[in-house]
Length: 281
Image 1 (tube, rainbow, N blue to C red):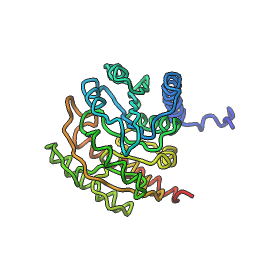
Image 2 (image 1 turned 90 degrees about the horizontal axis):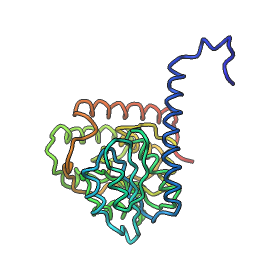
Image 3 (image 1 turned 45 degrees about the horizontal axis):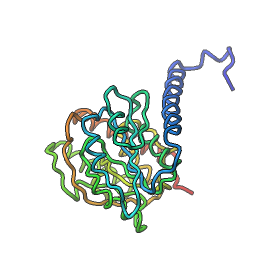
Image 4 (image 1 turned 135 degrees about the vertical axis):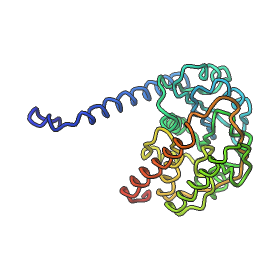
């Protein structure tokens, strides 16, 4: 019930501002989703290769060109969610003939992926693979990620540069990968080596279960692991090769900023999960 004039002075201005921002964000998501449905009303292939792309005009074309037609014996639908920006990322994706959803403003990788998960689920996908649009992930390795889902040994699979090969040279990022993997293992009881890798594969049932619980708009890889583990889904890992960005700079910020933000996401997500306290029914 709306507050009476008598009690209106108790309403915090920040709450009204938060609500205004939330409504604007939802409007942006709904606008992009509705436009996509008009352009792509048909069903997707069993495997959706989902990329959230922000100003990756110079890189995404090569990633899409390397996309396999089939994974695990199933056809693949590449799906690009363009997270705002001012460059030609959407033009490159559309020119490649792939399903492209364009957000009118930049909302963050987590928000773009949540929209992509919903589109994949609504269009009949059985498996969803997320990968970067900057060339760091090799699409040819998608078979490795999907195989444990198909054979029933995992519900979600994370690509591990720790188990495979890491061709990048940033020692601080490498140390952070190991540190945060140990932290999340302590919190979730998992035995993972690379919890901050965005190259992942899901059964669509996992996506449908966790998306309503996700909140983070950026640095969301930790949130996904914590949420999936807390819901009792099985998480596996496979070795992959991790490449440097094909061109341009990371959108995640410097090492210290990224590390602090990632730690914040771990703390807030774990607090929320602990308060919710329950696996899926």
